[in-house]
Amino acid sequence: MALLLNSSCFFAKPSIFESKGHRNPTAVFASAAERGGVASRRNQSGLETRISLVMALVSQTSSLSRRLLSELAAETAKYAFPKRFEARNLEEAFMAVPDLETIKFRVLKRTEQYEIRETEPYFVAETTMPGKSGFDFNGASQSFNVLAAYLFGKNTGSEKMEMTTPVVTRKVQSDGEKMEMTTPVITKQSDDQGSWQMSFVMPSKYGANLPLPKDSSVRIKEVPRKIVAVTAFSGLVTDHDVKIREAKLHEAIKNDTQFQLKEGALVEIAQFNPPFTLPFTRRNEIALEVERKIK
Image 1 (spheres, rainbow, N blue to C red):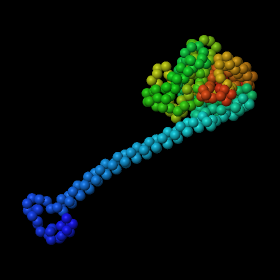
Image 2 (spheres, rainbow, N blue to C red; image 1 turned 90 degrees about the vertical axis):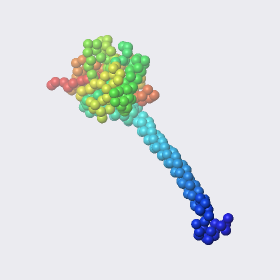
Image 3 (spheres, rainbow, N blue to C red; image 1 turned 30 degrees about the vertical axis):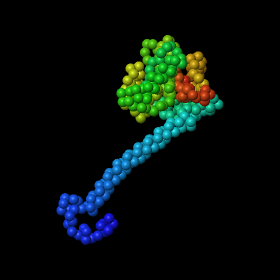
Image 4 (cartoon, rainbow, N blue to C red; image 1 turned 45 degrees about the horizontal axis):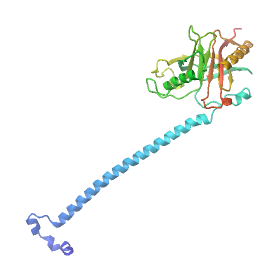
């Protein structure tokens, strides 16, 4: 066979193999080699495609994982490395709040008992709380979940919005509603028997273009610019504690030479921290709307 394949005279003539309809052995071997090469290339091409696809998926998954980890780390840092308000006393020095967007304000006056602030306008999502208590655990949890559902996608745009601070709880009068201060979670209280409401401060980047709630119990409202007297305290919030602190704030404002309590002002409670926060590091604020005294 080796001699035949190497003999030039054997392949120099047309050869009997071709005259009788048989293919040239060299052509047969060449064709077979070509077919093998094509098949090999096809197999290799298919394998390369699968490998490329797997590598692309791995790269995409790795990129997604890094992005998710980065987002998780950023969110965790907001709570692991909180920010602090300016402290007026030792109690406030221990208070810390998550590094989240909050209501913008400027301080007009500070005293030992309270701080006078002018807040910028902002929007809130609010819902009426079940029961007559503003700090009943079941009622508060139910209202919080309703507002959180709106914030995280239960809205007409399926928009997932960022958390802000504070959450505000307030009690409104039965003969009408009066929006007052909000921050993290705000609680508002009136002298008569009325309903309690909880509200979330909305991210400022949306302005008035907030997606509409799918839950009819959630309402979107704008809180106008106003002046409020605020006092901060730590610990867990109870209805009894709110009454005592509200009375003290009322009494302190009476002696102010520049500002006076606005007629019909209702107390609001702002809570800035998540439930797992240690009580002595929590920041809560009681606020009452005030106005400048006419000279």
